[in-house]
Image (cartoon, rainbow, N blue to C red; front, side, top):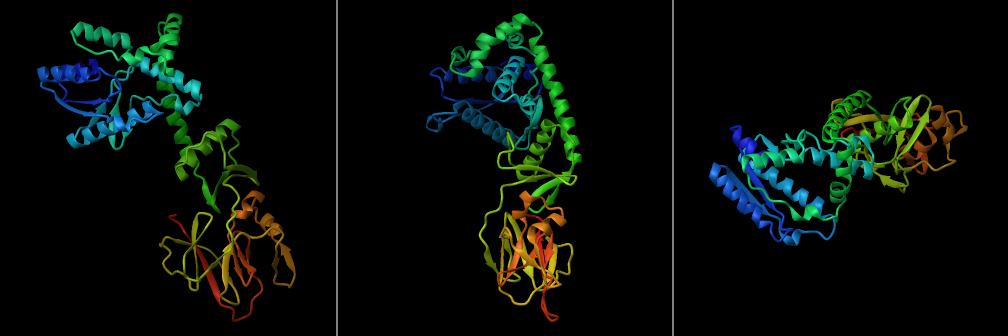
Length: 383
């Protein structure tokens, strides 16, 4: 109510958007109060209800938030509004920081309640974060504004309510500047996070097999994890709290981020027909692609007698034929080309009549006749 009244008094073109979550018997009172206020001040009011049959048995707070913001975005877009404004205040911010500290302690999560952001293409603003709840209540009382207290906030059934009732009052007694300090912490964390992200964006990893690598970062373990956490989110849209299925390897001046070992069974492939291996897409062609601007990047070329091809993982201990009639262990070829051990199952191997004729990064067939046909192996760059 304080936010709505401040906007009206400032002369803003505003639409009031209200969700009745139907979680309390008296929730309809909020609608009646808003209708009276908006009618008196000629403010457009858009309302909806959260159907009770959509209320989940668990995670109801998160589900309610998702429904609420979806409605706000829909309302804003239909109205052609430039901004969505919510009335989160300084107490909300301090409580949020405490909750994040208790649940994870991760710096990048501590400033999740920000003053501005984007939500599905609409600018989201929280202009009251520098004001305490007490200041907003005083404003309401000074302006003679009616408001409704959510009775569920008096219960101790959620962590936020327990902090609000038992922890926040004590902290405020210890420091009357608690809300101001919470705001300063949020601003500095936002600035530091933005600065860190700019730094990480400047260290772009390169694709190596189905993994990522960079020149050795020489960072502390914590900073190194934060870097790779950001890159996994950027490159694979995967949010991680620990490396989990990923493996970090330091080898010969490089840092490698490697997914789990590839266990795909060998499969028959046809020349000039695309195929997949370890999440990547390839094509073994009988002629070279002339247009270098296509989505296909040349991986390597080789000659082979026959056309009975298969693709898969190079078996451990396999020996590769050399031009001089001798053999070399595959692991030696990998080592000579600087491919770390944990990555070797990720290297695509092409077999012809069960003999390896190409191994990504380290080998191409050396035993063939003068008239043996040539083959070009490509991978799809945009996958």
